[in-house]
Length: 512
Ligand SMILES: Cc1ncc(COP(=O)(O)O)c(C=O)c1O
Image 1 (spheres, rainbow, N blue to C red):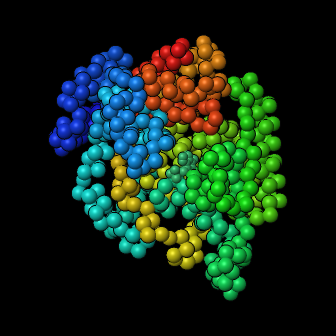
Image 2: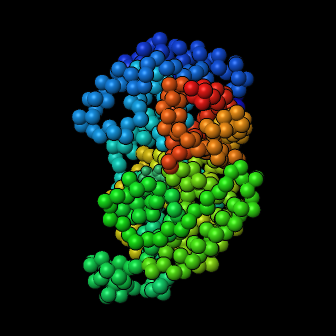
């Protein structure tokens, strides 16, 4: 570990040299010095070696949030950009490690991390090196249309990055722009796979009717097939993905949708150990209902899509047994099994992919990813999931080498610092602390969930929005999900001393 941190230190000093001018223009030297000296003390206090040795020791709250400078900036932005969903106006030049800064001198411990999307810290030195490399500059200014003109080292970038962490059994990838895009591409692959089977294999030609009806958006060319998703699930906001999203009406109202089925997702009772039999029954009910829907829905599902932990929909969990049952069901009914790891993927659950917790007998057919990967796409292993002709699964960019290079650097950083195991250990520590807090404040922390799932932890709060607001006043940026859940989505560099700080600040919120 010590040598790893020394390497990070070297990377950081190069970064410091290259970035001095830009940083000092915006961040007062005093602020930078304060970070450096305070962080040294933090390491000594906790006895834990910090991944970001010169991170702030604790949050700083100097004004109400938003403060006067932020208010001015928000007002200006509002004239040209919709700011009604704005959470806080950030200053990324002053943000570092687990800490996000604003324009008023406030520096918050960030356990929301750009909606679960920052893996290895703000202004991470290793990523700065990757971002300022000649290779990155070329990828940015010579962006290839990957389907037509892939760059000569695209295989290398994929193999050393995205594919080096591919879920077991899946050895190919189709890259994309966002989580929604990744899911939609996976749906298209599923439909083409299903129709190819119905036609009699990859060599069977399209019929004249397929060809003409497709141009009229009618079957059989545009077939009456569907994707089955689960109640409260979230899979994105583009047209196809939105049809499988079932979290909140506000995302869906006014948007035409496919008539696709939804199955019930288990509604588990907590603590799990006190409700084992009841929960097992509930999961079996959901599996039975899923089977019935797949068999009876008027537009047969080509695939089932599910999140390992329903995230936007309120942090809803199900047991490995449920997911194993679903995998078996999809195999039995010849329906593809797509696991949406857009939010759960890349380490946060204490495994690189959350579905590794399940012990499946065979891998999912496709696994979609985005967020912490910074790039996006779907993994697959079965060659039949490659359409039988070129241009059937295609778009201009088909991903982005710049983002794939960044993910390669993220993967290297995760491996260098052993961040998945670290997240598992931090999660255990944090969950224990939350459990103790829940005993003292049973009204504030209800249905605590995520034990053994790294830092992917949540609970229900009857005054959730107030808690999130007050947390900012205590120097912590936390997000919610669903109607009443407080969800923790810290970065993979979130350590035990951060967890202790979070627990301490949460207690103050509960007392207020
Ligand atoms: C599980 C899941 N799938 C898909 C998406 C959509 O990803 P994006 O917002 O990048 O389109 C999200 C976004 O929150 C998500 O959490």
